[in-house]
Length: 276
Image (cartoon, rainbow, N blue to C red; front, side, top):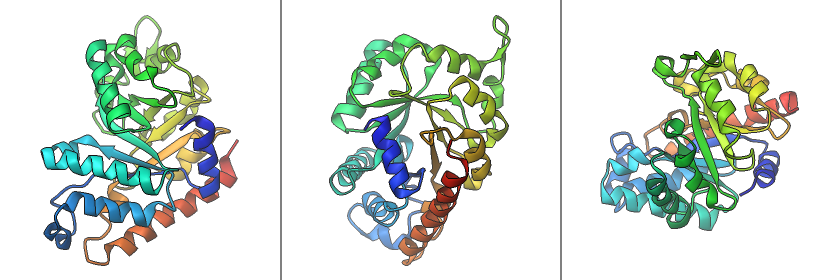
């Protein structure tokens, strides 16, 4: 999926919502634990009840790997289900890859060829040669971890680089623009860092930003839209727990749908208000 197609879908659905499919077996509604594949069954219901309100899904590999081989089978079934039933959805592998080039080549093949994701999150710490193998696939995206939503982001990401006087995360933003275009590369910017969105947009005015951290982590959706939106919207705002674990009863599907719709309606308002 290219940038124009992504933007077209945002405007069609009046939404820049990304739903995180992070199935924790301890939190899945108990009645689903009786079925053959509770992880896939849970995901399928979430997908069916949110697809009209979101434009992307993000699967965090940890929640599938924790279940062993059966979890990885559930993951593949989930991606296949989205592809076959809702082909307009943008699908992100939240895998946080990044290794020497030869290893990155294998990671890239796994997420883009074997499982057919649209994008993958990448740790940029090992530099350009660890990123290049992911850029050989047409209409596929890398999403660099730049300014994350956890409190530990202050441990290193705000370190000032002596040679430039910039924060480390700003150094990554500047340097990485030599690696790929805004048609291939996005950045992870945590929702808790709303004060930084204006300065980030001065460095990367045209790139899409994947923004985790609204809901339970306290990110301000309107502030993100106000300071982070560009003329292609340029935002994919992720919500996981706020949507998928909003209820655990047998009626959870309807409640999940209402929660996704609530966010979509706010996003529709902000698209009118803040789209450049």
